[in-house]
Structures are given as structure tokens and as C-alpha cells.
Length: 249
Image 1 (cartoon, helix red, strand yellow):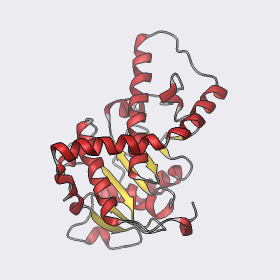
Image 2 (cartoon, helix red, strand yellow):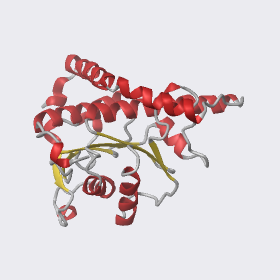
Image 3 (cartoon, one colour):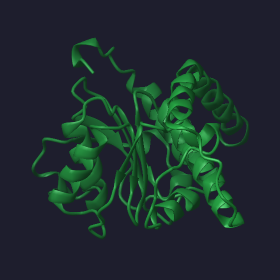
């Protein structure tokens, strides 16, 4: 992505969308205690970004709670309000090294994480949702434990530079996109796809796997439906607006 072509960011609108993503993740059951992190770039080069503060439950995140961090700040972890070490490791490195990853959503939803525990964690194309990620999913075969070491962050960023979605061995999933709506939609469909594949495995029956040609055509076909990401996200935000609009505060 050419950083010169990126439009100026409406910070408040971005804060509201990112805060909505946290609240919606709770509704879908993707949260995990007070861990996991979502972030979104403010600067054209991606290095200045918003992220949730350390150990704040997703259900309570408001637009005003999001911290502004600088991936080039060597003293960020010495701040009294320093971010979680693993969040800084993953998101700091990714925003510093992958400017195309404007929005980065990392969490441990059950189906995606279960798939990440398998010796063969490939998302085999057995339906339209699994095929959505054909050729667009990187799989990290290594696990360094809690991702809080610089080398781990650099390796993860390197993988995110190759594909927009990353399944992390023994860990979870990370989706990246140009907007919160698109990254959230990919997270939504990845979890559905992983659940479908796991249920297919559970039958013990042979899988009807798409050919690479059909899977690639299906993945490409999804591009025409990218606008659905915004329609879906707007609908989900309208539910929040009716039931608990405090995410906008």
C-alpha cells in the first residue's frame, strides 16, 4: 500500500468503530478475560496507532479509553500506563513493519484457537467460508509461548506482511485490513469457517475438498462482496446503539 494514497483519518470515527469492535467481540464470545487486543493506525505510515489499554475488559471499552501509541517510541513500556507486553510485541511490531495492516484484530475465539492446536491447522476449503481465505491465510507453525519477545513480534509481523490473516500455532488468530469493518468481517468469517471445518472433521467422514482452482475462484469471488463488511458492521453497531451506546463515549 502506498502511504501517500491513504486518506486523512477521522480519529473520533475510528475510535468509535474500534470501540464497537470490542463490544461486539464480547457478544460473539471472542473475548478472553482482560486479555487480547485490537488496534488501528492513525498515521499514514501506520506507526502511530490506537489500542486498548492494559487489562481492560472488552465489555467496558469506550472510544475515549483507547490509547495512542507510537511504534517507534523506545520508552513506551516505561510509561505508567504502558500497554500489555504481548500486545506491544505483536501490534507494535506489526504497525511498524506492515503499513498495509491499518487495522489489526488479535484474539483467541474457540474454533479458530482449536484449529490452531492441530498438527495440521490448515483451513481446508470445504465450503464458501473456508474458501474465502484460500491463498490469503498465513499459518505460523511456531509457538514461542506468550508473545512478548521482540524476535517473536518481528516474526509475526513478517508473516502478516505476506497475508492479511494469520493463524498462530497453539495461540489464536489475527486479521488485518484497511478498516475496522473489513477486519471484523474477516474475523467473523474465519471463526465460522473454522467451526465448520472442525464439525466436518468430527463426523469422521471423508471431506469433500474443493480443487485449488475452485477454491481460488471462490476466494476471488468474495472480493465483490467486500461492501457487505460495512453493511454488516453498521447493522451490528445499530444494535449497540439501541442497547448500550456507551461505547461511543
